[in-house]
Image 1 (cartoon, one colour):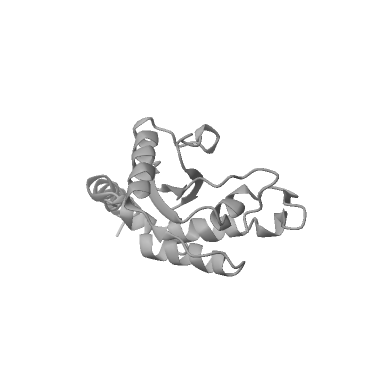
Image 2 (cartoon, rainbow, N blue to C red):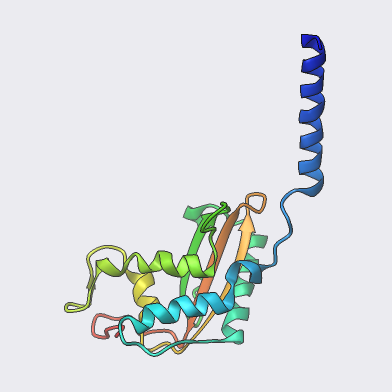
Length: 179
């Protein structure tokens, strides 16, 4: 085959691949697929058990609130990390984001494990953070008894945001330890 023929085949195949990507794109994902309630709750409860805190239960009312907030952020086009804000609602709240990837894709359980990385920053003796630790202390706060999470995607379905809310809202002041 001549070089012209090979070039023509490459161009045709490239256009065909582009057409297929546009036609089918990434699969449609329901928010619950990213949240994974049972696994998210299990990871939270493992983390809480490690410090002697009672387990959380899944709360559909709190989950609905988290999903409504996630939907509001998606409708507003909030996709930049610097634009994300907490809901300011009646619950304690953690938010995380991560890109779609083949392994350890952002999800409720992965977000909880990510927040656990803040544990070394929390000094239980002084009840102070050496660096960021508020997501971790939110997860293990013994004042909270239930959890609900929501999610949304942006950037052509490739950036996943997880919003987890905790009820009741922990006190989180200098005089109240999370455990």
